Length: 470
Ligand code: NOJ
Image (cartoon, rainbow, N blue to C red; front, side, top):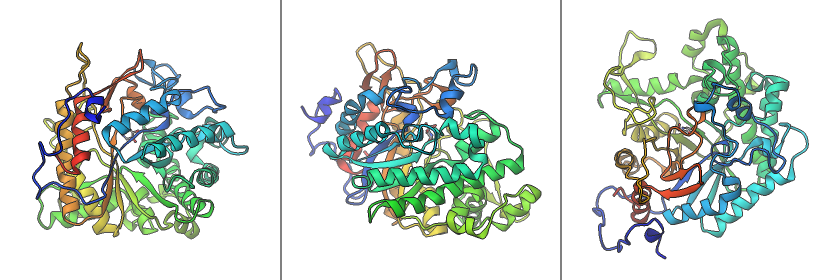
């Protein structure tokens, strides 16, 4: 059966529907795939010796997640991973980004590893490789062992950073014979700012500014310790980076002085995370602005945090429009029409395709990054399954086509983007929004666990097949 038939769609011969040869093609060898994360898809919460994570605890507290939904079962990928690898294969994907659940490996966060945990991921990796799909592994996608929250206050303590380094080194020692790319952390601002400041994500805390800044510092320190541990314990040639949703300043008009303002804005708005990682110091202005609440750190910390990376991954969703302003701190102001700016089904998901151009351009121009991956891009839609099993998510196709066109501008201008991971392979547990918001290109009926390709899956398959925007 041809792959299009597997998606329930007519076969298109490769001579038909060919995009313009001159435009919108991606470089030879560009990697195409999808991304997922452990707590969002796996389920099997009490199986294989897995310990509890802060998301198990949080999602079971009434009122924290939409309709009190949890990731106990999610997509049941823990049992269905072989079927899910076939979904990737039907798309023609050559890469897959998945995450390892820390509490499956170290149920208590540290100490004795659980062999059944690493064995699960080892089987997933083998299944991917057997199907010609290269695994890219994220080590922390928010499911912190509850034991570390209980013992140390989670990211409030350097002990958690140290534990992360040990865990990362251990996973690399076990998987790097087959996994060549590791991401340390996923989206600092999501798990720290939403988890420890706003309290809308696990562990649901609202720390005061000084403690919050220290938690941010501990998280970037954890990243640095993990980079070093992966290099020390992984096979030679193992490549390390991170997946970061850095704030992407888009110059509201593409001329000076707004261009310069957008670079300064990107540095300053990401000061506690990507900027300190890339530059090995916190920007002066940031430290001044934080005053007595600034994080406490040593020179050694900064050296660890800025350990050289092989690549940087960018999770790209929304633009942050800026204009130049001499009088504002840093020379820029962030602007947005508050009343009519369009967004997707998630209220925060402002549509701004140019973010997918500016993310690689800023990485290349500000920090001279030589290898870039788009580690997430995609959107939520209010998908409807028709009685005959179709999902006509034309809004998602509109979203993807426009963002990919801007990514194509970046590769055409020579910014070194090597691959793209669409978020997400299938509908899954969207954190505090539970199952109410669907990001997949496969629709999941959570009652039956049946997966259905959406129209966007057919679109993405053609993108991959032509290595071009279609
Ligand atoms: C980024 C996060 O990494 C992922 O877990 C989440 O589902 C998507 N954004 C969509 O919100």
